[in-house]
Amino acid sequence: MATPSTEETSIVDPDGDVILILPNECGLSPNSSQRPAPTRFKASSKHLTLASAFFKAQFSSNWRKGRELGENGTVAVHISTADHDSWTMSILMNMIHGRQRHIPFSAVEGCPGH
View 1 (tube, helix red, strand yellow):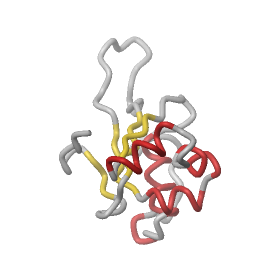
View 2 (view 1 turned 60 degrees about the vertical axis):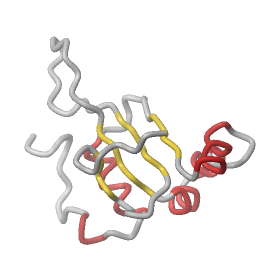
View 3 (view 1 turned 180 degrees about the vertical axis):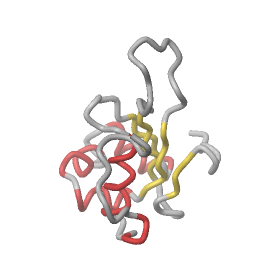
View 4 (view 1 turned 180 degrees about the horizontal axis):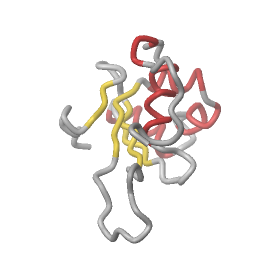
C-alpha cells in the first residue's frame, strides 16, 4: 500500500500503522456534484484496538485488515458511514492517542467555521 503524503494526512501518531480514510462531507452542499478529497488520519492500531471493540475485531488475524496489517505492517481502513465526520473524528483520534493539546476547549457543532 502506498502511504499518502503528509500534506494529505493528519498525523495523529508519527509511528502509526493505520491510515483511516473518511469521506470529507464538511461544507458540501446537497446540490454539489464534486466531492472534496477524503480526510486521512495516520494512527496507531494499538491505541485503536484498546479504545474500540470494532477495531479490535478488524485488526485480529481472523479479518482481512488484520492479516494485511500483519503482513505489510500498515493498513488503510475506509470509514464510509455518514455518522463519522472528519472534525469529530479528529477530536476522537486525538483523545484516543492522548494528544490533549490538539483537542479544542469548546465544542463546535458540525464542521469548523459553521
